[in-house]
Image (cartoon, rainbow, N blue to C red):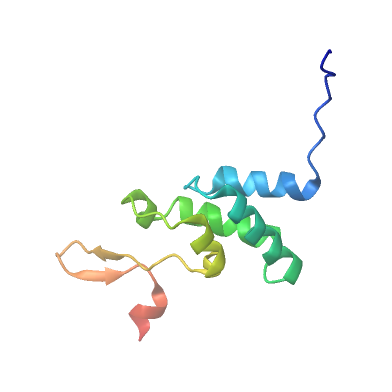
Length: 108
């Protein structure tokens, strides 16, 4: 009995979108559950693909990730972290004092 070779099924546009997001997200655990949540978010209109990608890219470059603290992908998706803003980082001025990178806080 010979086994028939089957050509791989091309990925759908949705699956390609998930894979693009997965490639950017800095933690590679629980892919199956992350996929389910990813599609649920898109189906419910909670976010657009561009929002999820931009959020994942921003998060991957964040100080939090650089320090080694990386949220589980399902946590990140469940809590809507794609909408999180980059934390405001204090900076030291030339005189040893602290300031902020945001003009909004400096004016308040």
